[in-house]
Picture 1 (cartoon, rainbow, N blue to C red):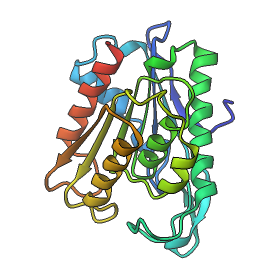
Picture 2: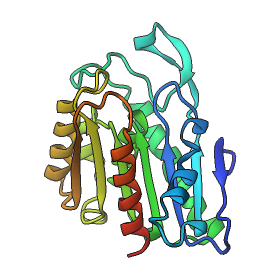
Picture 3: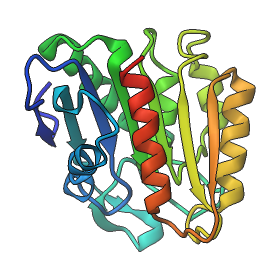
Picture 4: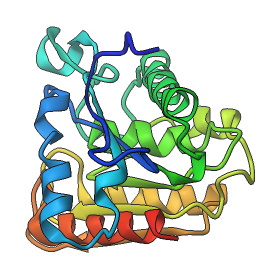
Length: 232
């Protein structure tokens, strides 16, 4: 289980009571989001922030077709940027979901974190994997954070969907209006897809003028969302 490469920060106050597992985007590593605990601590919004375990997994190194087959960290291959109708790496995509599922199990089994206190999330590719993974679980988790996310495997997802279990799990989806890589409309359509699949508690947040990144406003909204889930 712990053979999954990741940057892990165990709670500074034990026992750990909750966990956040956050997946980076294409070409990045777990290091790229490892500042999140510091941000959460600095905001002083989450009262028991010291009791959170953090996991920032590293995606496997794979050739990325859209980048001329260059090998880089990726949760799945991409054949065309931003085209929902392009060919999709379905096997790779669901392999990414399996990695995230294993990391959730690790928190439950090794750290005794209750599943409903685990938040999964990610940016871009990581957001796509996190959104899909919540649909594949047969137990309820705490929440999902999807930043600049998308879903390009909707037909396959509908076939694999585990109904009802997480339909009322809170999902935070944030997207910038001028994202050149994952168009804002693609993000919006993704939120509509998940609503249609049955996710009643998904909120879609729009960030005007933000490109393919997370703005300060968005990050503060994420911390507030984390607070609501953890302190429920």
